[in-house]
Length: 470
Image (tube, rainbow, N blue to C red):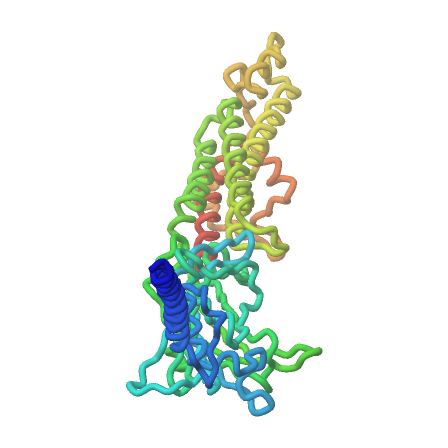
C-alpha cells in the first residue's frame, strides 16, 4: 500500500511539473509568433528587418515611405539622370512681403515662397488612384534636391515655427514639388543722384551653386506668371512693377550657370520729405528775407535773425546727411539744401554790406565837416555799430552861380534852335566806380533791390529744380 501511495504521489508531481513547463514553453512560442507577426508586415524584398523592434509609430511610418520610394536602393548624392542631359528645374515664386529697405546699407529684406519642380524617376512608386504623397523636412534630407541659392545675399534663413517650413510632394510618376518659405536680405545697388525724387531698380537673383548649365537648367515654370505677389504696402516706396527674367552668369573656374531674376521697381513717396525737409527749408529762406524790411540801424535784430536761419539750415542738412549713405556724388536733395543755405547766407552778407556802406557814408560826411564839433562817433556807434542820421546836422547846399547857358525851360524858343553838334555825346554813362559810390552813398537801395532780387531768384531756382527732378 505504501508503494502504491508513493507511486501515485510521484505521478502527480510529475504531471504538475509537466503542466508548468508546457505552459512556459507555449507562452514563449506565442510571444515569438506575435513578434514575427508584427515584423512580417515590414517584409520587403523577401527579408525581415528585425531592427524595427524598438521603433516608434512615427518613424515606422517614415520608414514605410522610404521603402515605398526605394530610397536605400539609390545613391541620391548624384543628380537625376547623371551623365545625360541637364535636368530641368522649374522655379515658381510667390512674394509674401518686402520687410524693409535700407538706404544706408543698400539692401532689402524679402519673405517669399520658393517652389522647385523637377522629375526624379528614382522616386516613382505604384499607385492605383494616382495620388501624390506629401512629406516634411525629414525626408528632404535623404533625397536629392536642387542647390538653389540667392546671389548677393547678405543673410537668409528658412522659417522654423512651429516646424521647418518645408514641403515635399512626390507624384507616382516621379514628378516632385519642393517648397520652402524663406526670408532673404540681399544687396540692391541704389543710385541716389535724384534722391528723394528717385526710382530704384532692385532684383533678387537665384542660381544653382554646384551645377552649371550642363547639369542643371533653371527656368521659370510658367513664364512671367511664375512670379506672384501679395498686396504689398511700403511706408516710403510704391512698387511700380514686378517682373521675372532670366540670363546666364559666367565664372572663369566653373563655367556658365543659369540665373533667374526677380525684378521690381520702387518709386519713393515724396510727401514725407516735403514735410521733413523741403517745407522747413523754404520757410527758413523766406524768413531770412524778413531782414530786408527791418531798419538797417537795428543791428541786433537783423544779425540774430540771420544767424538763427543759418544755424537752422545747418541742422537740416546734418539731419538729412546722417540718414543717407556716404556717397561720393551730389544728390538732388543736396543741391536744394545747399542752394537754400546759400540764399540764407547771402541775406546775412547783404546786411553786412548795408551796414558797411552806411558806416562808410557817415564817415565821409564826418570828414567833410557836416557833423557838429560836439558829435561823439564812439557813442553813436556804441549800440548798433553805425552812425545815426538824426545826430548829423546837415548844412544846406550852397547856391550855384548863374550860368551863362540859357535855361531851356525859361526860353523854349531858343531851345529849338540849339541842336547837338555832330560827334557830341548826348548822355555820359557812369563808370563802375561811380555806380559803387552812388550805392555807397545810398545804402538803403541795397535793401530795396534785395526785396525783389532774392524772391525772384529763389522762385527761378525752384522752377528749374522741380522741372528737372520731378
